[in-house]
Length: 489
Image (cartoon, rainbow, N blue to C red; front, side, top):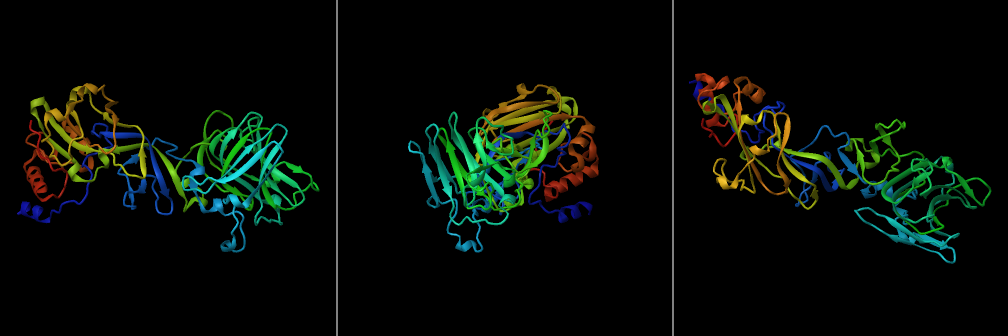
């Protein structure tokens, strides 16, 4: 009567992870490790987790993977590859619909230069971001200037506003300098500069060399005053990009002189007190350039709530057996190990693969095995590369599997099973671990007794009622651990 009730009430699990305690070091958890994953378009308005992306059908999906929790800065952003609405809003007018002029249009810029110099402004849209490039060829003692002044007229509190410049320094020849100036109506200006002779972290310096992904924000009153007017910045009527002394080229992805506050970018690690150690801090400037590694997407400022991040880097991604949820992808079987002179053994199969899609690119992939037992306790450890995932566990030919016990190096070490794994390849792992009776309880954890077992051994299945319930669970699918119940002694 008891068995009949168990079978009648059992329902197959739609999706379940292997019923093992993966927090125990002795539990086998083969893993494909990736050094750097690139998400080509991470849409913050549609996605939350860093492992979400658009699949080849245009639907938001997520990789069945995890990021190593020891990573303090697990994601990387190049801010010149961020498409945020605020980046292109300057100059703001009462009705944005009437704002035909914008700094992102090369036709709204004008140029001037010395007799032996030249400068051009061109649209340089790339990475899904609107940009312009200012390319100056400058003779010694001369300057070349690109000016944006269309619809720029800020008459109130010009010195309380923040000059914002984001972009790349594509060329900076010896002796060249580039000033980004906010200019009033009679020729006075305040400026930030790009120069190899400056300290990058100085509050008036955008960059001191070539690079990508720079972000500069500074209150205009803190910038040095120059020009030929009345000696005061009375308004903001234009922005000048001025190259002096030698050739230079900059690409602008963010330009603004209207805001009265700096925008929080993200939380990063930076040595803020010159003690040689990195501190966690929320920044408004990126003077290091390049990819900025941040502590998490959730630390990005409000400006980026609906932004699209192009080529988002995600570091130290793990595709683990523990992450599998499709019961056709794994098998877990505890049974007697009398033939090995051990009480019980765990026989495990798993199919691991890293998916591919147009919108993601993979870095270096390695199939690894964290060893929680001494070498002799692994009776079997083998891997088959490119095994058809539809082939039943135990039915793969011996020639398709490669013995990897020789890769084991001892307890608490990591064995490298496949050094150069490839995405979209199925790797079938087969392991047999010999266990003491008390270790079975640890490896099963809260899932103890949920897997099928052969005769003998200890724990839940060592008594008659446990065996009856185990059979009922296997028939009814109540515990849904595996599609393979083999593993003789």
